[in-house]
Image (cartoon, rainbow, N blue to C red; front, top):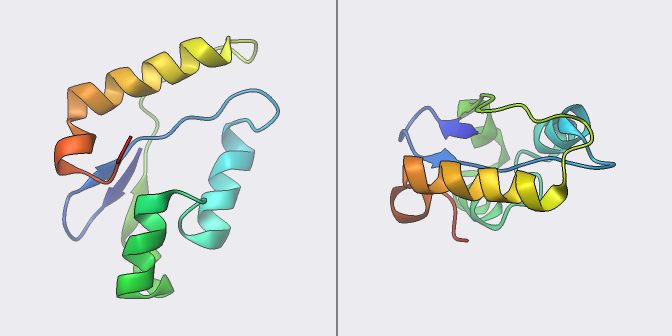
Length: 92
């Protein structure tokens, strides 16, 4: 999960398969958005330095051989629980 420490809005994502957690977070850290539509739009509006307001957190860890569909189901679960589609930075 990525939390915007300025607004409190949250973004929930997942990592699985060949692009495991460390590689995924490296992409987020280097770009500030990791390719996520909502985060890209926020950084276009606020500037790339705004990414320094992001706090990264782990919500859940799945086994390295976890089925991608199961990982995505857990991602959707957390989006529902945290209401990140309605009040956060997830659009899907």
